[in-house]
Image (cartoon, rainbow, N blue to C red):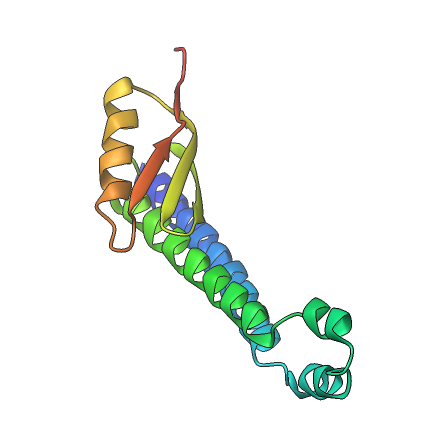
Length: 142
């Protein structure tokens, strides 16, 4: 029985590592996009300043950076909520998916009891940075 338990822990640890590695790669990519040099856009906007329609249609470089920051913040919040759920003794084995957008976290998937559905919502709400939780968890019919 101990061998099975150790194997299960190894699989969970490997899955957690792969999830962390995926989110880290996505965050690095988003930061790379945010660090792109916006000067060509600014120069073009300066050259077209006589044509107000063209100047008005230019996209602000700050908007891309803000969107990338939001994406990175969402990823970080997503990971914190997932970790909190996985570390909870009642919820660690449940099939819960997390999606963060802004400070709103959506939980989906299935849990074994209504009590665990409510508990997952409370655990997610208790994570720093979460302002609201949309709990769309279903209770599995056993």
